[in-house]
Image 1 (spheres, rainbow, N blue to C red):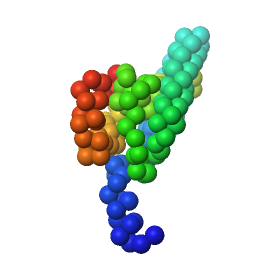
Image 2: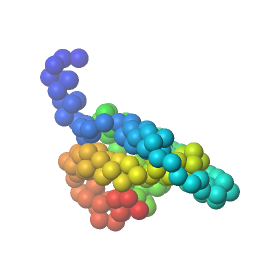
Image 3: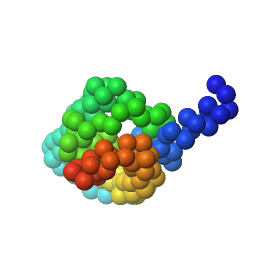
Image 4: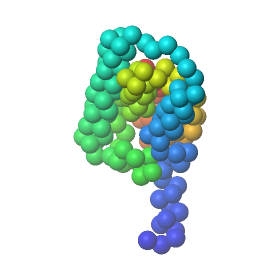
Length: 161
C-alpha cells in the first residue's frame, strides 16, 4: 500500500477517540476501584441477581441483533474500517446506536451482578465520552459518506432510545 492509499483510507474512517468497548471497560474498571475503596451495604441478593441478569441478557441480545444487522448489510463493525453500507434495519429502526446502548446495558448488568453499585458512578462520564468522542465523530463521517440517506435516518431514529 502506498502512502497516498494509506492517507485516503485514514480519511475514510470516523476517527473515534478509542475503541468503544475499551471506553466502557475503562469506566467499569474505575467503578470497581471505587467499589473497593468505599464500604457500603449490599443490595438484596435476589433483587441484585434478577436485575443484573435482566440487564446483562438485554445487552447481550441487543449485541447479537446489532451484529447480525451489520453482517446482513455486509459492512464492517469496527469504527477503524471504512463503512460500506448504511445499516437502517433491525435495531437501527429504534436507535442509531444500538451497539453503544447494548454496552451500557451490559455494564449495568455486570455492576449489579458483582454487587458493586459504586461501579455505576463512572457510567455517565463513559456515556458522555462515547457520545462526544465516538458517536459525534461517527455521525459526521456517516453524513459525509451517505448524505441524505443518513440525514433521513437521523430524522426518523433517535440517537440512543
